[in-house]
Image 1 (cartoon, helix red, strand yellow):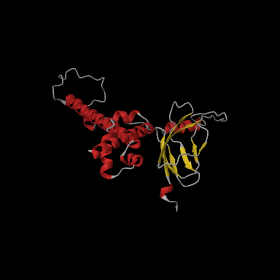
Image 2 (image 1 turned 45 degrees about the vertical axis):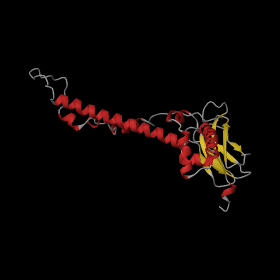
Image 3 (image 1 turned 30 degrees about the vertical axis):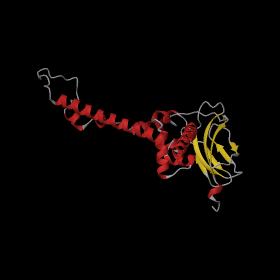
Length: 241
């Protein structure tokens, strides 16, 4: 706890399999020499602090455990790491849905069935016959604006509302994925900017959502550094004028 903040380095890493064909999700990264621990996200990216000489232990189910000693001592380090796949020997087992006939009988007698009315609006069931095969030939055709039209309208509105909710959820999922790879805090740590100057550079980067979704975090961070070189060069020219 007494360790100085100036002695800390930040590693932005990406973990993939040995052939680098897929990212390793939810791998555990533990700094053996301190209390720092983290887990890789669904894209295989992670962030952890370390000091000179620290050892990182990386482990994940389906892969061999690996020890990694960072050799770079800069404020921000970006690195790609790989894990070697492994297999496990397990004993042969037999799986049955029930232990015996008594278990089957108990589960069958206590089986909970869904009421079909739960899946439709209550106003629909008020006008819907439970016996569709019993046709009343003397009944006149349903006029426009009658109960059937009401049913269609209610179901249609409900479907549109559900579709809108799905769209909003998909949009929020995309935004969370983008924020996990690219945000002002990460950019500030990479280029060392704060406040209004950071806002200005963040706007200068102008990455599209499509680019941020398709590319890995480590590639985006490399691009941020390249953008900062261009940004700094333009700023220097303005100051000379």
